[in-house]
Length: 315
Image 1 (cartoon, one colour):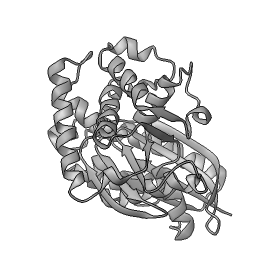
Image 2: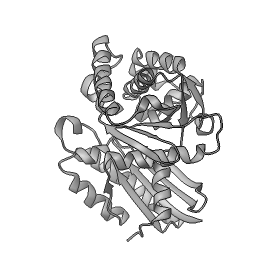
Image 3: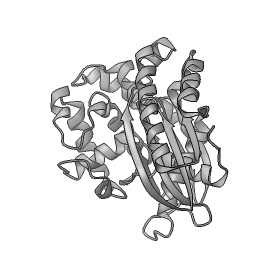
């Protein structure tokens, strides 16, 4: 077993996984898995730059994660940065800050690389499930972008498009509840993005839809009627189209305070969850999916597998 650390820094959150990984068997044992909402992508869609306060929130989380990595004695770390830092003009400030705190340079990966990591992390734990047909369609709904990956044992076709929950909220529906016009505008963006996805990724060929990331897991927690967030109950739950539709309708028509009062809701997702749920619902409608298999294992696990196989020594 190799002890590794993986950090995934997205548009809305930054997450850490410290784990023991056996590259030969693909077994992964969590030692520390945590998430902090930092909203790194605050206003990036409008300004093209990372805001100073967003950078400071992210660096504060990095300092906390550096201490955890030292505590667990992980000697290899990979830091992957996704949509917001891809889009920002001043991403050099972000890179320099992370390097100073953690001793490694963040890899600002492409959307296709992001999709590959997501597929590996999500499907590794589904091996041997005779009740889930292949190919899989893995959909990772992030803050700035959403990744679509079709494959069997490995990713075959992938595409990343800019329809994340933060981006859609800031662009079309910053208030709540959403108006019919705002819902229509978000849906139009999602549908247009799906048209682009279908040019290169055969999403309708999938036999099993696997949904990843906070928007999907939060929708699942609400659909399951959980009083508080329970990752074990949510992981590999199967949520029907009708349940997703009901939850999405409720979220779109809720006020900020009503969403905040939902037991499974992370405070950092309150204002963006409705758009994320609408992405999921629109995808399910497009491909005719009767259910979504929800995975707590995602890009973070894929990054951990990659560093165990290849390694990147910390400075």
